[in-house]
Length: 249
Image 1 (spheres, rainbow, N blue to C red):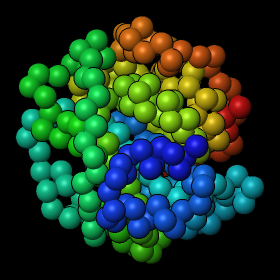
Image 2: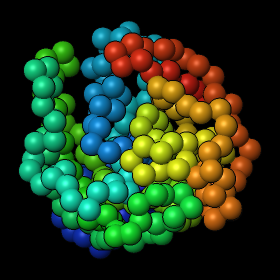
Image 3: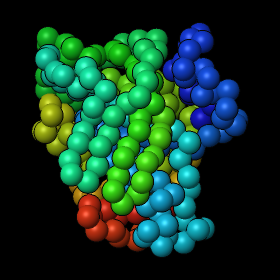
């Protein structure tokens, strides 16, 4: 269940994240963004305000309760999250208004899946809870909780999401590997775990229709990632950014 996953990530902390957990029900909707980098746009694109502007059918809108970002973030030096300001342009400002370090999570960094594993990235193993505020000239002010786990996507799914029987309501896919940012996988392996994660919606910009060497390595290293690919039924396509929204069946 979603709650079990969030309790696992919180550990015994009694801080900001604990306060949020106390307000959530037993099975909150979690949006997972693997290989998120510094991209916080899903907070905008999955908001009820955006759904209203785009006139999405109410029956197709699942409101997120919390966002889960993962990325092994391969840089040995970085200023990401060193200051509250995450992003700013003439239309949008993204910043965190509060933050809490959660228990560290040191999962494997596999050279078969990743290119840059030595020296280890500066953020490796960190887990951070963020209260994120977005000021948008089209959507107004949004406030969203985000848990950012600085680890490899494949190891996180195999060793945390699946063992915790996590329910991931949405998977947002856009910046995944393929040699960019040090990744050798395309993320194609995700299609084989979505049903077990009870994922309802998959949102993507473009996706490989075949395995890369990193995907194949992941399936050899983490056998519980193997599964029958799900069926994706397109619900809609949006522009700026261009995304395809699919129902997972």
